Length: 140
Image (cartoon, rainbow, N blue to C red):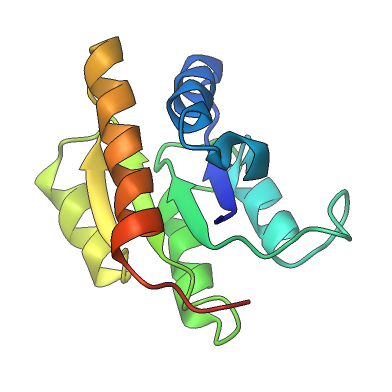
């Protein structure tokens, strides 16, 4: 079973993501942080997260307080210890510039959040199924 770090500041999106992952059993290994600074603290085991487990997958919103998601993505993909963690940008932005910049920063996937509840659940389940059942992730 994989562990997932969700970097998301919208409580509604957190709730929907958690609900989507409950069916697959990943919800028990889901950690949620609300901004980019907390994400880096978690990944580097700083501050409130000295015992954090390195996640197998990061679901990253772009529009975050304190530190933008692109900044988090850049730090993760520049760090030799973290760059192997797949990062799925999961955001409301459909801007082509955001898509291009995310892939330039080596995002593993870019997914626009559907506004419809059922479609949102389906998209998160598909992400989970792909990374749990289809791809082989490095062992940590």
